[in-house]
Length: 313
Image (tube, rainbow, N blue to C red; front, side, top):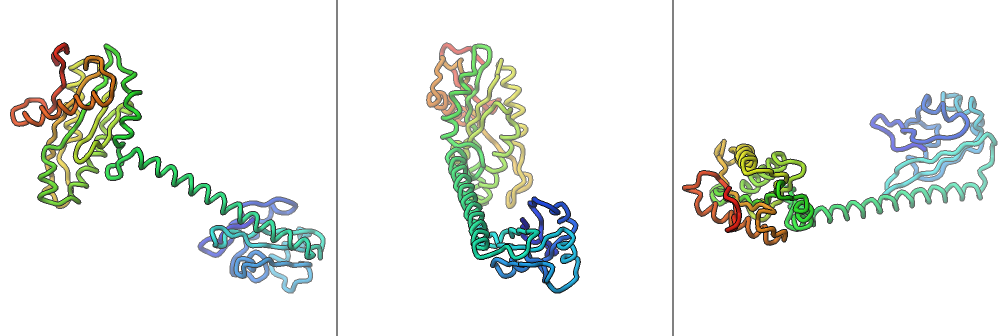
């Protein structure tokens, strides 16, 4: 079987079986050739027959090749895919005049079956791709390509299950302090560009076991795993700020434009042992509110939610 011709017009052999077929790569067929059935089928789109190759006029290399292989007769049928010419199925035999009406009908039928099979396979693959795309959309934010709220609620319980008294999980909400200025001054296109950059930075700065999602607007939810101490947490958050909130260069913003943010988080299981995702996220939101309210006088750029029984950070 030969597939579409390349840029030079030469057909590409994709499958062959039988006597002499190992020599086919040494005798390429061009769409501009007149003798080979493959070229005729490609141009005319109908089955083509040679009941006796040796009686054909001409002494070119192709005819010499057919004679050398002992191929006396041949037939070729078009294979379509998606209403376009896709390949040519070629058959040969050492006996002349064997392609009677019954055999020709059978060859045409085989060509149609292959065409139907290819179309069915393409349709199945298209349906699968569309299904995967819809599944992706259900779990991701289209602007930043990050997870969305639905994905957080699906994955957070498993992350919380890894926590212990000596291995905490941090649930944090990050909010840009100066995002409204970006939107109001330079427009929503500039704001969207900043959010995309921030999403990329978040993905690169977190561990594989962490989780980041766009929570809405300029808010991002971050789940930090494997936290063993407050000192380790402070180190991660300080490094996090340097990489994620570093200045951006997005036209038409002044370059480089500084990003400012606030972060509120809660630690599980220190958060009174509450494993409900909604409650923990609510506590992170309360901490974010405090961080933003005191952003002018605060020293760290984050605030940790604390219960009366919680140890001081």
